[in-house]
Image (cartoon, rainbow, N blue to C red; front, side, top):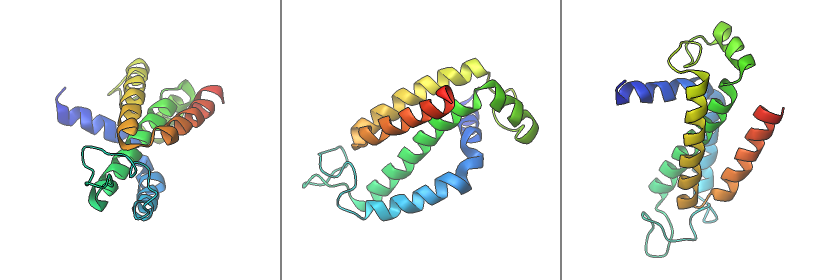
Amino acid sequence: MRLPSHLYTLHLFIHSDYVSVVYPQTLFAIFATLSPAFPGTAGKAVWSTEDGDYPFRIRIMLAIFWIQLQLLVLDTSNQRHPDSIAEDTINKSWRPIPSRRMTPEGTRHLLIAGILVTYMASCIIGTSTETLVLFTLNWLYNDIG
């Protein structure tokens, strides 16, 4: 598979959540990034200004990137379970597992990689605490029930 195909597969995991998750959270993030208390603004970073604050356009891009990473972790965690696969086969057959673009085992590997990448990115931008909370809630919901 080529890179565009892999990126498209990642998109298929989160596609149905754009209207209900990505767009509202992005609007919330835009308003939140206007606040000087936005996570990551206190420390120095690669894109920070001299006073340690991210420029607004970088704050927005980081927030959108973070939302997408979190959603990918949440969706891969949820969509790999047998009940979800059965439901998606009927209702959302275009998703990666029912369409056979990925196996449940491959999705589990993607989930592990997604957790690692998301946590590392969160440490860089200063949202590691929020990420750990979301990971815990995700685990409680999808794996503990």
